[in-house]
Image (cartoon, rainbow, N blue to C red; front, side):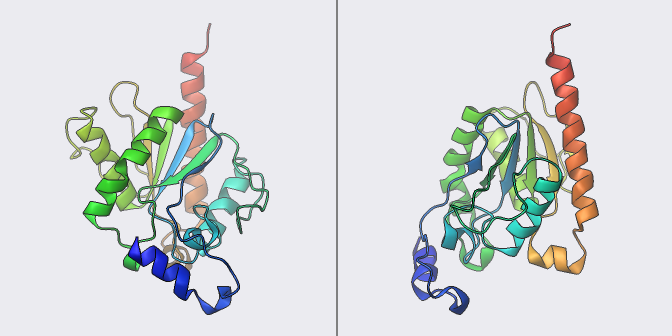
Length: 215
């Protein structure tokens, strides 16, 4: 809390005329969407500035460009809360709701924010969860383990493009490298790599829809 508010007071020179949000950032998107995209946390000068997750930073530039190309976003840019962006069939949220120091949330921060994610999952009931980065992936599995919905996290290993059919009616879990500037500028995560993950998700959703359609 102190960090997010300090960032909002000090500001970055490029945004000195902005009134920073400086508060917890909620998820947003299509409440009927069957894809839930789980990121890490609001960026200090992105979501913490604009008040919307993945908005106003390089990660969001990459993510929403890819979602727009795949038909999940109404436009390829996400600059501020009133920019007209809408998601279709998808909902984006974060493991941690406040920007953490060094973009590395503590275990306590993750635990404190977990009930908000849990509530979103219960309300949205997605068919696929796309975890962006290892922290989001591990935190989601820990939530399921604490709820008794999986016995162990050991069988599920993070890796870009990894995907798992979880027990029972749990959503299909898909993993991707986080679209951070560090990953996208170094080529660790390329548009082609992310498009393959989105195609995989489309196939999973189509398969699930066919399985539940009346004959």
